[in-house]
Image (tube, rainbow, N blue to C red; front, side, top):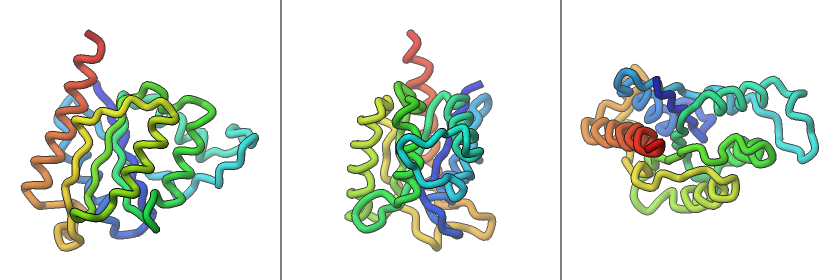
Length: 179
């Protein structure tokens, strides 16, 4: 079974980023399992030198990353860059190589002309930690709040088709990486 960890960089209730990833999880075809990481709010602030074993949320994050074959990130942009909570999550992976050589992609749901600062920062940090960015799987699929149904999922068929393509591209990359 292929396991893709879905990480939303938003802590906001009603986030279109989180709704997009919930939709990705629903669309994952067997035998792919796409699991939404839900511990972003619980992560303590990264302090260099702190022992991560003192923080259950950090231990849980590392376990999630260790068992993932690939990672898909969907994050908003705050003040022209990544939200602090998302950068904090990434900071926790720097010293332990949790993302090193891990196939990783991002999905941008911001409207055209928005979100470029977050994507640029994300690409920089992922490069720094040695993640294997799967560029073919990094897409912009705008989602408006009105696109999210009462079930918390994105119903737009264009988004769903694009999200399925992202999943298929990641799975194809994993299948061909070992050849």
